[in-house]
Length: 125
Image (cartoon, rainbow, N blue to C red; front, side, top):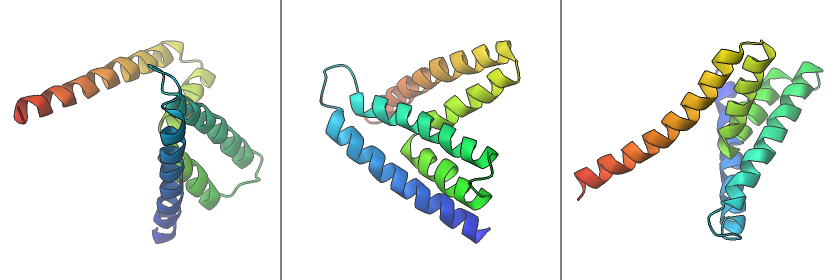
């Protein structure tokens, strides 16, 4: 179990640092568009697809999958995990669940951010 946690920890740290560097460099390129975050999310989706595809073809072992998918992609962007989950729901042909999951995740996620900001403003005003 310790080895699994270590792989997730190492991959997550690397992914987080890379996300920070990319976002810091590209997020100021355009006004009202977070290019760095957008790139990280799309690259993360591509990478998680490549890594899962490699595991399906027996190119990646389970420990490497923990390092790259759960760790690196998880640290790099949680959007990649969200995209993979949506792909899996789509593949299982549960279209109503897919639509519900997408809409609720996005809408409630935005509302949760707004609520968190509101709570802090109320507590520290």
